[in-house]
Amino acid sequence: DAGITQSPRYKITETGRQVTLMCHQTWSHSYMFWYRQDLGHGLRLIYYSAAADITDKGEVPDGYVVSRSKTENFPLTLESATRSQTSVYFCASGANRGQPQHFGDGTRLSIL
Amino acid sequence: AQSVTQLGSHVSVSEGALVLLRCNYSSSVPPYLFWYVQYPNQGLQLLLKYTSAATLVKGINDFEAEFKKSETSFHLTKPSAHMSDAAEYFCALYSGGGADGLTFGKGTHLIIQP
Image (cartoon, rainbow over all chains, first blue to last red; front, side):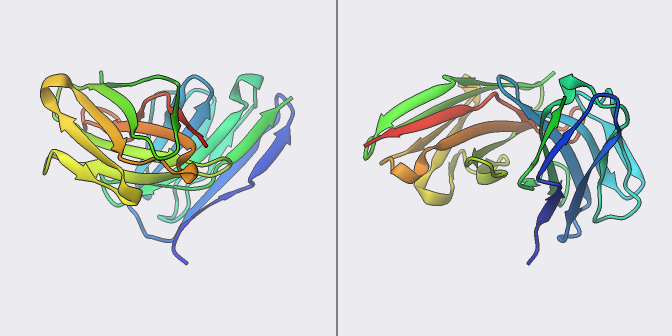
């Protein structure tokens, strides 16, 4: 089935560790996005990508790194995790700018 | 910069009653507007979208929203609430003026009373 898959669904790690969240979509959408969801803030854009090898910062990019070597994958890396990065992370994809985005089920990340 | 304001972090209605979730936006250019629903431990699902065509937009599960430029609003309504409508609802905006992602409101938790 076509869709967007995030892994892992749950992750617990310690401050200072590197952690990578995976995102894979089967629609061949050009655009992919990473958001974080925190109580009282809704969803905030971390990074996005308009195509393979093209990425750009969103509202809250500090402490995160992304890459997009293939259209279908858009991993998000926390190079040195901090407690403030404890959150639920959502990956999304869209056919074009302004088009509805399709969301994965999220990764709940806890940093101790 | 664009922004989205959802009035009321929690809204409670009785089963069978009208659902009204409020969304106001700020954008320097004509926006695209979306309503999403989120059930516990799931991602967001699109309910409906406004992309500068008809101002009254119909979505899934009898939800609809009306774009009112003069009021900068995009309120979500449903004539008769069902228990299964209990969820978190997000209004979101795309204006194309900056990053290509969506700007979200903080969400409204809809509670359905039996």
